Image (tube, rainbow, N blue to C red; front, side, top):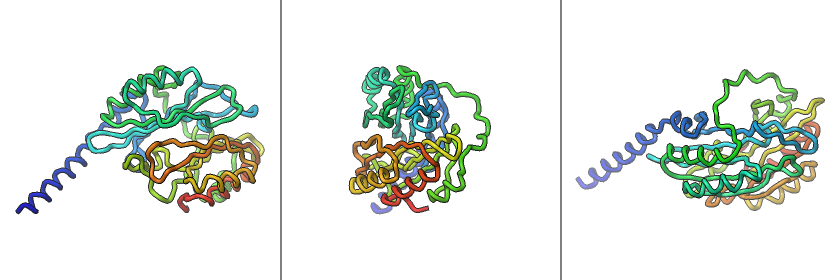
Length: 294
């Protein structure tokens, strides 16, 4: 009888947990944040925060926001509450006020670093982590972002993406994964084969645990590339050497999370050259990692 009662209570607890997850109204979370998001694989509610207000160039190339200025926040239900992770793109003057408001609200800063070198103007990238009521988290993040120029109002529906001036089929074959056009940039996401967690909670690819490789067309079959590769400690230097042998510049190596398993490092890169040559260089680097096979 006691065994039956135990399993009945366990089932009730599990059922309550799933019910709580279903009760989170993500649209209201988007309203509290000030910008709607989309539900992605892994039951992640992700809000894109591109810095469309900034004009940034590297080596004379004006960057599209989707190439290297794409901030984001991703929420995932954890029972009746939620976890939020994200990457905020900030100018030098925005860092202190945004950080102060995040600290006051109890949201953690897990990294602050560059992605680019020689950029005019300089941008930094602040990674955040929060746990709690999703509405309160969204409101706190809205308040913090209000200290920056990050556009928060939802714009008009984006028109269908026009054809991009790249041989995307050849890039897909070379990279071994199919990409998508976003904001005039061809983006590829390649998850790691092994699961990633932070503080014991799963971190799906939509929460920033996937390799990201972005191509911005420059005309004549050329492209600028940027993004980051997600690496274990033993992969860092083999990948770094591989990128440099392909003429791809390594611009940063750092953490994004504090309590991740396995321990991961994020390697950011930059180059502009023939798009297919760059794709071959990126594929050679990925082959030295635990990226999932396609």
